[in-house]
Image (cartoon, rainbow, N blue to C red):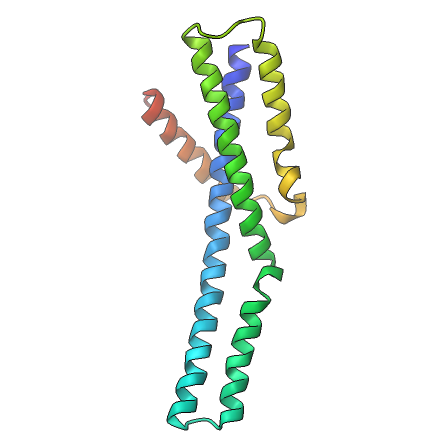
Length: 165
């Protein structure tokens, strides 16, 4: 039972860091889109004030930038950012529960009769996390993110559990 609980903890931690990487990646696209809209808006305003463009063209440039910003929630990377943040938080909570359960098991403050039920509940919770917030097609597999998540998990284990390696 210890191995099952430890594996749940490791899997939840890897998934937590994996979705953190997805959130960081998607937030970069959101940032770039916002920067593009800001530059286009200020260019339109600046061109209007300096009379480099006729007012109609300046206002169309500003309008195009504002439409891009208004449609932002419909872009796939914006949906992915929201879902990744939600999934990241849920996996973080699950990893914390697994770690607390494991610590209670190690230090003897856990009733062994209750352990299988708690482990099963945690397994069900972890298995249902991604389905709550997104579909499978929202997050294509990314091996670079997975390797980074594994590396971050190893670093976490080395820091918090003094595992070395």
